[in-house]
Image (cartoon, rainbow, N blue to C red; front, side, top):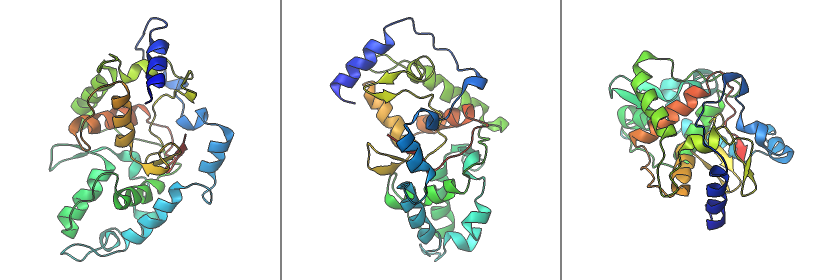
Length: 258
C-alpha cells in the first residue's frame, strides 16, 4: 500500500468510534457486488476472464503424470468436472492425519507428496495456482459450506480472534475495515466485506491470478505488521474463519477484482 493510502486508511478508521461489530447475516455481500460494471463483465465472460487461462493450464496439469509414482491427478480422481464438483466449497477442511485444517492448496500438495511421490508446488507458482483454479472452478455457483465440522471449532475461534486482533504500526484489525467501514472507499477502491468467494482470483493490480493467502499477506503488510509465511497455521485459520462466515454464499472462482 502506498504511503498516501496508509494515511487515508488511518484517517478513515479514526474518523469515528470503531465498533468492531459483526455484519448481520442478511446484510452480507460478495465482493462482486462492489465491483464496477466493467469488472463484473470481465468476470462473467469466460472468454474475457483472465483467470480462465490458469484453469486451462490446470486441465493440462491434471492429466500429466508426475513424481516417482508416475501418476496424474486424473488417475485417482478421474474427470475433474465430475469428481471435484463442490470440493472447494468445503475448504479449508480438517485433516485427520495432521490434526488441523488444511486449505485447498495444501490439499493439492499433500496429494502430490503422498500419492504422486512428487515435490510440493511452491505457493503462488503457476502450477499450484492452475490446479487450485481448476478445482475451485468446478464449485462455481455452489454454496460455501466450510466450517461445519465440529473438529474445526477451536481453529475457527483462532481465526476469528486474528480477524478481530489489532496489530502493526497502524494498530488495526481486519474487522476495522471489513466489518465497520465496508462500502466506503479507500484510495479510490471499494472496501468490501472480505468474503473470499472467488479465490484464486485475478487482480488487475497484480496482473495475475493469486491466492487468498497472498491477499491476506498484502493486507497485513498494509497495516505495517509482519506478514505470516505462506502456509502458516495462522493464515489457514484466518482463511477458515473468512470462508465460514461466507457460508451459504456462492463460489465465483476464478473471480476478477481491481
